[in-house]
Image (cartoon, rainbow, N blue to C red; front, side, top):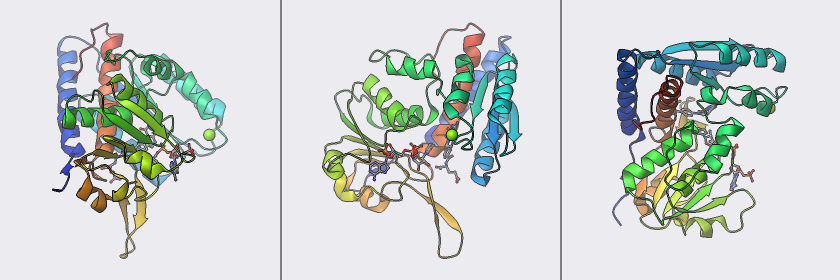
Amino acid sequence: MADAKLIDGKAFAGGLRQRVGAGVADLIAKGGPKPGLATVLVGADPASQVYVRSKGKLAVELGMASFDHQLPENTTEAELLAVVAQLNADPTVNGILVQLPLPRHIDTAKVLIAIDPAKDVDGFHPVNVGRLGSIAPGAPLDFPVPCTPLGVSMLLQDALGSLSGLNAVIVGRSNLVGRPVAQLLLRADCTVTITHSRTRDLPAVCRQADILVVAIGKTEFVKGGWIKPGAAVVDVGINRIPTPEGKSRLVGDVAFAEAQKVAGYVTPVPGGVGPMTVACLMYNTLQATRRVAGLPFVAV
Ligand SMILES: NC(=O)C1=CN([C@@H]2O[C@H](COP(=O)(O)OP(=O)(O)OC[C@H]3O[C@@H](n4cnc5c(N)ncnc54)[C@H](OP(=O)(O)O)[C@@H]3O)[C@@H](O)[C@H]2O)C=CC1
Ligand SMILES: Nc1nc(=O)c2c([nH]1)NC[C@@H]1CN(c3ccc(C(=O)N[C@@H](CCC(=O)O)C(=O)O)cc3)C=[N+]21
Ligand SMILES: [Mg+2]
């Protein structure tokens, strides 16, 4: 079989960013508010610092205001909740992202439920989780939806067109990725199977998949022999591995070279899902701002 088509997430994300930027300009031109995105990072994890900084930079590039809050590792839960309350009350802030994971002494669920659901641009608040979990097939996504899953579903719809009736297998059941991916593919009329570390004969389950989405955090875990010929494979994993030169590079959860020989479509790491996550955060921030301005929902 010919090599798989590469799903170019970086290119698609570039287009989405451009459309969001145009949406921001249009909103402001019509006298609407300037979208504002607040990011909150607790602790000094270098990778997280890089991500949060790049989110702020992109927001400004797209015409939004960016507010970055860097709190020390020893911040108490009460202090973090006070920052969230202040951002909830600030009318210039339309989107709030609290970078995860939080230090162990902070109860993540308590922080996420404290964010105003209307400003929850990660889609992690239980109200938004519930909206996604009870959505009717094909109904509009007119509330905040988790960024990585939204990006995954956009890439699949762009590559395949209608997903109706396709067998989708998700590897990983986290609240951040696996579960919301499953909800979005169910909304798109896929037949969805969610798998995890207790799944029996995972390779055999994966081989049933027309769409295989992998989000486990294990370097090149899914092998070529697990993939149905012609399937669309979306690799969400971000694993940093050392190179012989003493540097590091990113690899996914799928053995990419093997997958390319079997799959019909495959996303690379880097340049696949990652850039979509950040673009969808901008999309969610624009949409949250349009909603507070009382404007109707339009997908961009
Ligand atoms: N590209 C992007 O924008 C993003 C990438 N990521 C990346 O995606 C990956 C997953 O992230 P996240 O969902 O937060 O991870 P979690 O660690 O929260 O969840 C991992 C999931 O994988 C499952 N799992 C682990 N080992 C196996 C195994 N051997 N067989 C089957 N299932 C297994 C776990 O199962 P169980 O529940 O049974 O423990 C769990 O459900 C990571 O590499 C992360 O860095 C995350 C967010 C955004
Ligand atoms: N509240 C919260 N929301 C998140 O969305 C969130 C989070 N916390 N914590 C961490 C994870 C991880 N995540 C990524 C975002 C972008 C890339 C990304 O842009 N990746 C590039 C590579 C970037 C590089 O080279 O380092 C790519 O795959 O091409 C990856 C991973 C968002 N997360
Ligand atoms: Mg915690």
